[in-house]
Amino acid sequence: MATLVSVNVGLPKDVTWQGRTVHTGVWKAPAGGPVMLRTLNLDGDGQGDLVGHGGEQRAVLVYQLGSYEHWRGVLGRDDLTPGIFGENFTVDGLPDDEVCIGDRFRVGGAVVEVTQPRVTCYRVGLRLGEPRLPALLVAHHRPGFYLRVIDEGEVRAGDAIVKIADGPEGVTVAEIDALLYLPGHDREAVGRALRVDALSPGWKASLRALRDQPGSAGNAGLAAVAAPPAWPGFRPLRITAVEHETADVLSLHLAAPDDTPLPAAAPGQFLTFRLAPGLVRSYSLSGSPGGPSYRISVKLEPGGAGGGYLRDHARAGAVLDTAAPRGTFTLDRSDRPVLLVSAGIGATPLLAMLHDLAARQRSRAVWWLHGARDGAGHAFAEEVRALHPTREVICYSRPRPQDRGAIAGRLDAGVLRGLALPPDAVAFVCGPPGFMDDVTAALTAQGVGDIRREQFTTVAASTPGVRRSAAGPPRSRPGPGPTITFARSGVTAGWTDSDGSVLRLAEECRVPVRWSCRTGVCHSCESGLLSGSVSSEPDPLDPPAEGTVLICCARPLTDLVLDL
Image 1: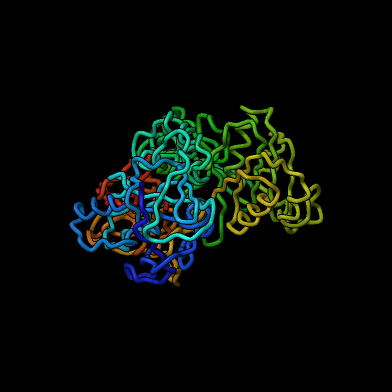
Image 2: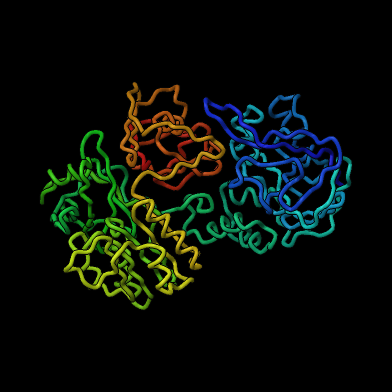
């Protein structure tokens, strides 16, 4: 019979880490007596980051004395006291390779159920001063696990932990942790794990993505996966035609210099261009996918460096250094209704989707919802009408007297509420960040659950627990080593060995980044590698998809261009 050795609690606090302030609840200490275990927490306990930790499915974190003994030997530590791994329950027994998802236990006056392994993030390494620890917990099959509270009650050190029900399917904590984070991803085992009702919704979503992943490259449970790039690095493409869609939207048609057909792009993908030294820009493909050539469409923003270069230099016969089509914002192949929702130049990737739907899925219901300033600035209007979407709704924020057939005003929640949108639709949304936020909220309120977004600018940073500070805009910097270009941010930086990783360099240059483990486990930092090659230190536990890189452990071997 297992025993509850220590009940550990602690409230979030600010700690200093790498010159930043982190708000975290990973510091736990043994409670002096009985503690009430409630649906969301133990009394006196809390989490600093409620996105990654806490909640009904993760009310209690469990870690075992057997793992303590293991890490004392591996890490050479004699200071590992209960709670130091951030757990609430330090237990004798219940090893990760025996406890199953869905197992239920009575402990003291409470009943609890196993829901998922620990999601490893950098904070457990921060607590122990061991940055490698998130990866080690997974690699050594000793993550620990979370409990959901079925019946609230008092618990205390010394309580027996009595199993009262076995989880169905017999999927152990260690097994399901390896299924998601380590190579292999056995589809039969994934299917078995998905049959366990007690598995938390987040883990179910990750395992469904693994189950449905085409091919075996990359880890769709952790990061969106696209087909490998059609060619490495950059290659020359010739401009065959230049078209002015409106006064400030320019379309370029591109072909191979020898006129051989170009590899097909998925509808919704983009091309990246090396226009001049230090000037790298990406533009969505807007033409019909699968043709022998490509079309991109570019907004000529006042003062925009990329658009300005193309306005001045793009001519039929000119050659552009071009990376292969990229991106995971691509049309699905279901038969569900499709909502294509855009504003301004955000129409471009959705236009490629509309072309594809007209050619390959004519029976599928397609809603084209678009906002523009007025008729003069409404690019692709005739082209869209010729593709015959099931329903077309156009909004002009500042219509001219001669503009007819459009709703006066912005494409917003009020307009969307009046459309009786099908809740089983998949929605693709593209436009300015504020527009996408508003539309996403409005669609969610109407019951649309599958909403996918494309952002032309830098992605929103995800730095869990780190207090925000006024860091300023991205900035370039010199360095003696390889040159790293962060394409979306417009930043170029020289590498120095003291940077340690491309992630650390990006942070130094104030490039918005996303990360969680910082040791090659979670794939949150997975980014497109447009050109160049890297080494990894440490090696990722599960390699990223071809054409991508985990910047948390990447070091440049050559000059790099990254989709960041």
